[in-house]
Length: 319
Ligand code: ACO
Image 1 (spheres, rainbow, N blue to C red):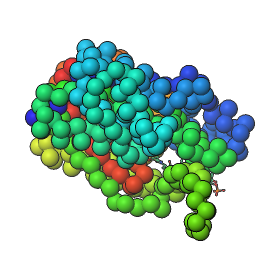
Image 2: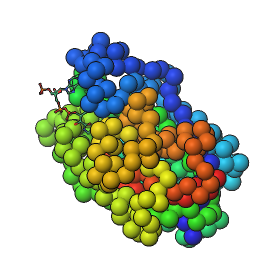
Image 3: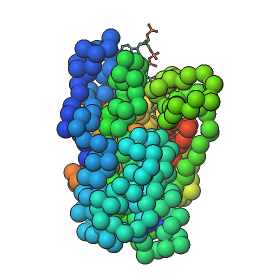
Image 4: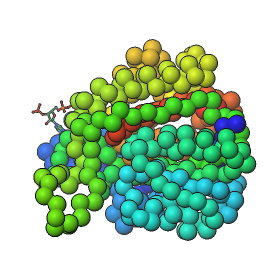
């Protein structure tokens, strides 16, 4: 027993920030951002909170699944930018949705949605009749330094969600981490304890772009290969790959390494940039709603992120 996807949803902030808008804030250009990353614009929270977006994505996923919030047995939110450290985003959602169930957040940075799927799969092995809401939501606009052109151009805000129910459509999943902080970290609450003496850290996300780039290409190719092996499938049997949307050059290089045709890869990085834990979830919802998936399609989802975390899975589309 694994699970089936019963419905998906996503939500984005209303405000669009183009590359040209950014070139008025930092020393950059549309040409540099597009050619180095594939990003044309991103959405940024102005009046919405990230919990608002997670809620809208959850409502859309529930509607798409035909499930009522009261039927949910568990809510898992993947985020590194929740509005509060406590209550968790999942608890805030639980109340707003009117669900009566356990709710908790997890943080695996951009890999969070895959981690949430893996945790959900473990629940289904104990509780096959559960209905679980998983959400990937991040407002990276709160984490980056808007004076730092090497990071602020890469990210956007958004949320994606899926309702999972009884079924056998998760064919294989694998998550991992190497614990390496230096390529990418973002500070947590510093507090104002008068007894601490340590060196002041950056207030914003810090990233060694080239190191993350090298890690990501290898991770994407290797994780897909491993879940294919676990599922006993050849790469040629995949219908679609839904990769983390960090940089189009990472995606292209990994697809080239896997000797797969570029058309197999779904992307929306041009419109949204890297929305961290929401990337794969938004892509899943948009492809579901646009009718891209046919019953029986085999999807590979893959992500990497701070941690450094990795995750991939093979899903049979059965909706
Ligand atoms: N506009 C103009 N110039 C820029 C910009 C910018 N926005 N950003 C950097 N540059 C400059 C640099 O200062 C450098 O200038 P220099 O040569 O005078 O020193 C030059 O461009 C080249 O910089 P590089 O870092 O070598 O550029 P690169 O081609 O490696 O691209 C990038 C940088 C886009 C960050 C790339 O390395 C990348 O995408 N890395 C992966 C990032 C990623 O995947 N992050 C995901 C995080 S996942 C999570 O969990 C949050």
